[in-house]
Image (cartoon, rainbow, N blue to C red; front, top):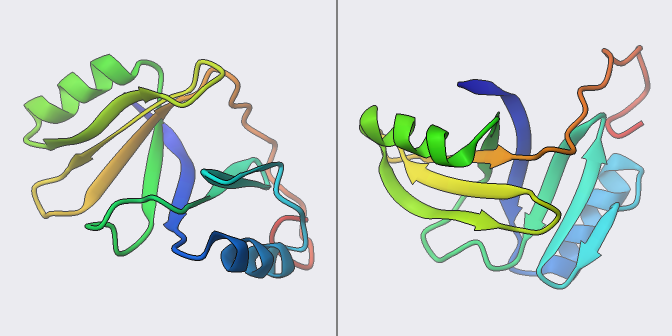
Length: 129
């Protein structure tokens, strides 16, 4: 059911400061830059900054790739997860949802028909290069 890790989203109460910091850290500009979300493509994976992550979100949310969000949610609920958010269409036929797993952590899933697995990266000097 799970296709692999796809995205990590960091809560960003100061989106402008977070964007500057990650741009310097990664050495790349965000490919998506809006007041509601900033996204970086880091070697084929998404690093997202979310200013409105919710009051209960104190750490990052990791999204696992799935082929069908609705089927994956049913599977996760049957496995004991509690609904948290979604499914939501975030544009361009990309759908996301989160659940609370039995240990209390937020578990995210993403259905992204545009995701392309990149070949393994050759050695380089830093992330995002």
